[in-house]
Length: 220
Image (cartoon, rainbow, N blue to C red; front, side, top):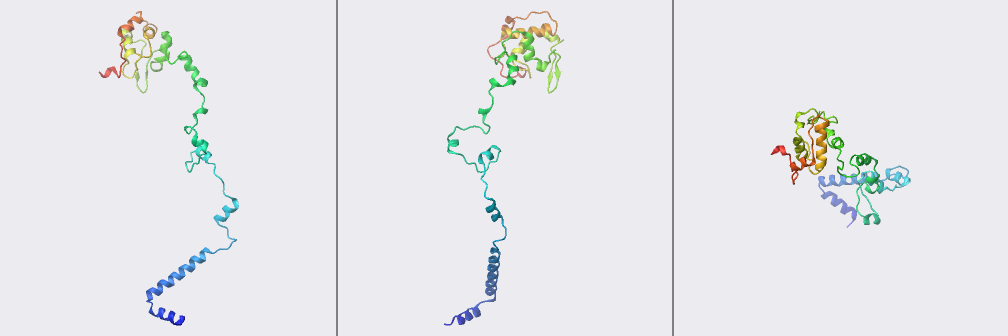
């Protein structure tokens, strides 16, 4: 059968809707084909990248500056021991830290009190809250005065608070021995208040107990 006759027969049997759909399909294909064709002289984003070349990212630098995109590690880095983001091996040790010098002088090169000088013990451990002249202070809390305070006439009152702590004040049970507690108590009694009572290590031993307080004794 002649092809022309076949085409004519097919077209005759098609419905208007089918003809419309086929026409729209042909028009769309032609439009898309036209959009995809362009002159080689037209600049595009892709052609600019080809001319400039693709830059290689420094992944190590991006990791150091906090860019947490794709991070690639070498075999040596993967095999190395884990470290923090900040390499603490480059930080100075405490032995070489100049800010530690004043603390070593305060604690005489150790991590605890070694002196039995009552005045030094007071200024190292008490003056920050009760002030250097024992005048006390108001601030985030109330720090009672230790100078010109009638309660300081009782050495056992001071010793008891130093051993057990009181409210916001910490216990010095494990920080000072009997001689040190006696020395700082004597400083408060005599130097800050002018009382004449003598404080000895034996006085402290009378009140010292085996177990340091676990909480605030005022809560009992």
